Image 1 (spheres, helix red, strand yellow):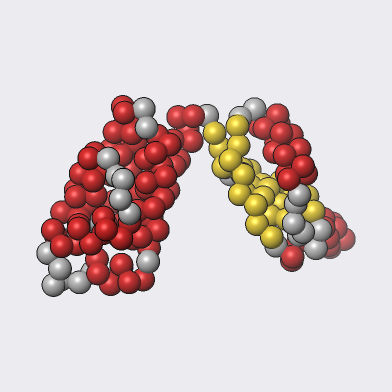
Image 2 (cartoon, rainbow, N blue to C red):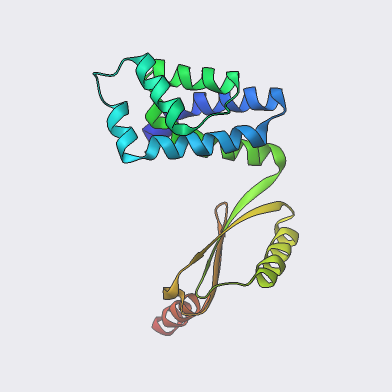
Length: 178
C-alpha cells in the first residue's frame, strides 16, 4: 500500500496542478472518481493486466468504459497513465488528489460511524458543531456500525471522538481493572 501511494503521488500532484491551473478542481475530482471506479472494476483490472492489449487499445477501451466528456487534458493524463503502466493506480491517485484538493480548499474529511441512521437535521447539527470545534469545513461520510450499541464515533484526520456506548463501556471496564 505504501509503495502504491509513493508511485501514485507524482501523478496526483500533476493532476492537482493541472486542475488548479485550469480552475477545475471539482470537475477533475468527479472525473477521477469515474476513472478510479472504472480502474477498480474486476473486468477492467483483467484488461489492464492483459499483455495482448496494446497501449492504444487499452487507452481507447478505458476511455470508452469510463465515459465520455473528458477534457483533452484529462484524456492526456489517462494516456500518460496507460503509457507508463500506471492505470491500476487510479484509486490511489484519486485519493491523493482529493487530499490535495481538500487541503487547498481548507476542508477535512470527517468519518462518522453511528449505531443508528442519522436524520438530516441531526447530521447537519453535528456537522455544524464539528466545524465550529475544528475551525474548518468538513466533508462528512456517514456509516452504520451497530456494534457501537449507541452514539457515534467520529474520525477527523488523526483525531477520534468516541461518543459511543461501546466506547464508554470499554473505558469503564479499563477503569475497573485499574
